[in-house]
Each structure stands twice: as structure tokens, then as C-alpha cells.
Length: 509
Picture 1 (cartoon, rainbow, N blue to C red):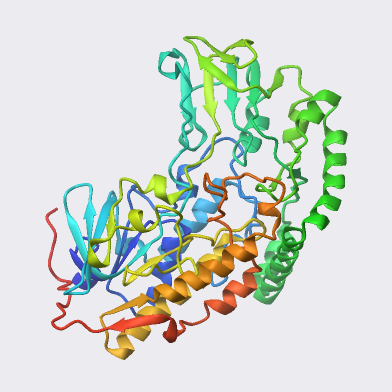
Picture 2 (cartoon, one colour):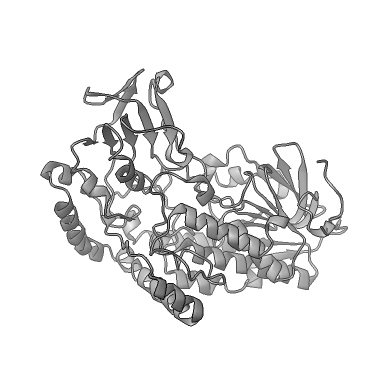
């Protein structure tokens, strides 16, 4: 292997932290631009990110397969409108193999911190094994959905049964005939609950807040459709475009809450038709505006509550005992297994507490984000030259495919690196005035959306109610803003005596 692309090198031009959809896209776009001097630092033993980690029963994407994939790497063989985790992970690995990304990847390389050397315009990334990687640019592509949210239930440590989070599913534990309590009713829970219900003796579903759930298109692609997509790529691209614009239309109720309230009537009817018990249907019906929290899709979740062995509990958890769980009303349920479908820690100020990022002047990103995580276009942060983010602050979506946003970000980052090289500079740093103006307008525009209406509270927000997760506009607007770097928004810096990374320097193995 050429030493320039040896993933064990200590010094590279670009380092990518994370090997999920974002990191893989970034790596591919660097190669397409002729930038080979990069490494992907992946904490696990394989690429895939979310789709490597989440393998719970029924795990699938809630964005259509032909849209939840790279535009430049179409797959004519998706089996269904919405694919399961295994098929998505196979797609990721096949794409990585086709583009030679494994050869650029250093596995079991978890990054624990990063600090910037202003005199040399270089970053040093610290790894858990004590090694370091030096780079000119680095891309934080770890994503926001990788740290499980584990509730601190009193007495949980005393429980004598089995406990696991949905993202850490124990497939060796047989649920057959067990008394199971599942806490949480989010996107993961609505998928695994219908899958495990027929196997267990008793399933207690603990709900804090009901979610809006709409019907799911479960049709599979026929052999003829796959053949046509393979032979005539234009048909596949047209199908993808139709899905994109269909999803993009869902942004209208977000911007116009009154429209969302009209759509609620149809969803409430969907609940009443699927759930036989009126009281259960009532408790499964949200009281907040449609779209305030993530809208989920399922045809199987609601009918699960028609089963004799499934119970919905809306009381809070008071404590966990050796063989049972007690709720706030004093009622108690025996349990053999506790499944935590409680989502993820999505506030970077929390999940990055053990990941110090030290920028210009010795300031840390944690200090600069103490009130809120903010970035320019969700990609760059003032005071942290040559640091780029993927799926950063306010670039998440509630209506379309995040892969679309990822591709926009990768293109933007490549353009930034190429512009720095063309100018002969060592670093680019977004102007704080530009970043502040961008976020001030963004937060002003968020205020009129469904996410901030009627006391809405969701994982899109910080504890103080500020929305730092969602892009509050159409995705095509993000595409327009990220087509190329606006040079006037950045400081372009040449250091006095830059030190060029010596890519051939080996690491200790």
C-alpha cells in the first residue's frame, strides 16, 4: 500500500472522525476531488455508524430507500420502499468497498480530544490508545445519534433480570415467554414493540408522551421494477426525484401550524380505527401539534395494543426492584427484562463533555457552546479554523432525507479545502459576525414554526427550549447556500512558518 494513504500514518492533510453515512460520503468526495491524503478514524471495527449499531427487531429506516442513499451511488435493487438495517448496512459496506474507503480507514481508533496549534495551523487529534494524528483539516462526522440515553431509575442497579438499550440489543437473550417492560415510545420502540409482542408472555409499554404516527408504505419493489431501474437509470433517478419532492412538501405544515392542525384529524381517525379500546386510543393520541416532535411511520404499532398480552402504562417510573418495576401511581409489574427504548443524548454539550476541542486562543468548544451549540450552516465554528462538522447544529430534518444534507455538507467542505489550497493559505476561519448573524436569523425563523408552538417540547430542543437540531427551511435552500463557499464569510490565513505534514511517518503498531 502507498504510504500516502496508509491509515496508520500520524500526519495527514484531512482526518475524518466517524465512519457512518457522513464520514463515508466525505471520504468519497475527497477521493473524487483528487485528495488522497486523508484518514477515516472509526471507533468500531467496521463502518456503518447508526446502521452498524442498531440491530433491534424490526429496525428499519423511516425515509424511503431510494432517497436514503447517495445520489451518486444509486441502488436499483432495494427490496422495499423502506429498507431494514441489514440491507442499509450492506449498501454502506458495498459503497465503501467500491470506492476503496476501507484502505483509508483506521479502525478501533476512537478520538478523545483535539487541539489547534495556531503557529503551525495544524490540529492534533488524541486517540484512546495514546496515539495522536496530526492534520491540517478535520471533519467531525460522528453524528448526534450514538450515545444511548440511559434513564436513572431509582433501584435500577438492584434489578436481577436483563436490561439493555434498544441500540445495544442482546440477541442472545431469548424473550420467549418472558415478562418484558419496554420504556419509551419513540422511533425505535414503535418498530421493535410489534416484533417482540407475539413472543413474550407479557409486554408492558411505558409511555411518557405519545407520538404522532402515520401509515407506512410497506410495498416491496417487484422484480420488474428492479430490472427497469437497473437497465434505465433515468427511471430510478426520476423515482428518487418524485420521492424527494413528495417529502419536501411535508415542510408546509411545519411552517404553517394551522395546516398541521387540519392534518391531525386524519391521523386521529387512523388511531381510532386501529385501536379497539377507546381509553387506550385516547392515551395514544398526542395533545401537541402534529410535527412538534418527530413524526413516525408504522402500520403495526397501534394494532399491537389490541393484543391481550400487551398493556400501555402512562404513569412515570417510581422505582425498579429486584424482580419488578413500580410506577408513580403505586402499581407494580413483575418483569424478567427491561428494554430501554429511550433514544439518544443529542445535545452535543452533554455527549461531548469528555471530548475537549481546543481552538484559537486556548478556548474550548464546550465553553463557546455553554449556552447553545451554534455553527455557520451547521458546518464551521468561529475560532476553530479548518474544523468542519457534518450533521452539525440546526442541520437535522423532520421531513426529508438527512443524506441529502450530508451530500451538501461534503461538497461544501471539499470546496473550502480546495479554495484554501488555491489561495495558498493554511487555514480558513468563519467570521464570528457572519456566524452570529446566520444563527440570529435562523432562531428568529424557527420561532414561527410548529416546533416552537404551544409549549412544544422535543429532543430537537435544549432544556431551555432553544431549537439547535433542526433546519427550519426547505432542504433545497440548504443546497443553494452550500453549493460553494462564500469567501467573504471567512478569514483566510497564512502562518509564518507552516509545517507540512509528513505523511510517511509511521505510527507504532
